[in-house]
Length: 272
Ligand code: ATP
Image (tube, rainbow, N blue to C red; front, top):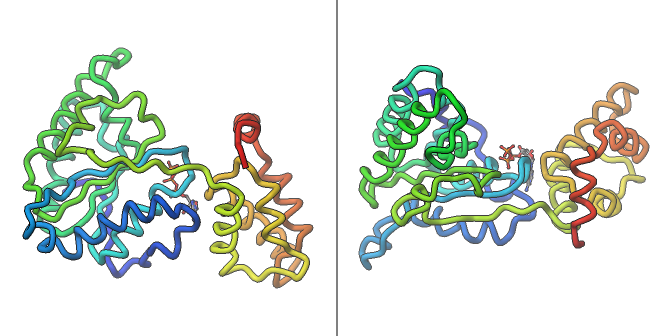
């Protein structure tokens, strides 16, 4: 049994509609959805369907959400595991988890395997600091073996996410492995407005709440930050037994969730 969590249609289905902004990213992934839905179309003309897609971008920008949406749109099971789950103290455990994961996936193909924090296993070999890096190399080698091993048209697409593409072992980016890369950026003002709108669907807003204005004052926020901002606002409203969020809740939530010094420097470099 692998450590991965399998999600199927019975879980709440995520679709591209739940992913706000990220228009280009979604367009690139439409193709993957189509491969999963109609592999025959591609096989017929001799096209090689990609095996791996690497999603690259800062934490909280929607990489996991995008991967789930690809599975949701294609209507296929989604196996999710974090790279850090592979990295164990005991040599051999990680490699056997990788093997189990691909075995489960093959039984459930067509499907998606999603590896979050792939950098935890796929860091450039020979750069480990001290103990445990033999283990990581073994795990990475097993991942490469599995990716090379399944046939191109077996209906498994491996998606992986990282915010440290700079430390990845170049071997994983070779053709037939993660040969597609989708860069997932921080949202611009329009993207922030769309993300706020998606998350406001389930949150009643008072008349004085202006999502456009909030979008303008949240440069540097990721989707996760914006979701958190609205959630904190809802909590503040509930505490006052109010049935809807008012601008003052959002102002107070903004102070509470703050915008860390790390983010401040990002804001300065943002051009929107
Ligand atoms: P990490 O690298 O930390 O895993 P991630 O890029 O995978 O981050 P997600 O886990 O997909 O980020 O995003 C966290 C949450 O933030 C989502 O569940 C969602 O609520 C919200 N979110 C992020 N981006 C978007 C978006 N583009 N549209 C709507 N919601 C978003």
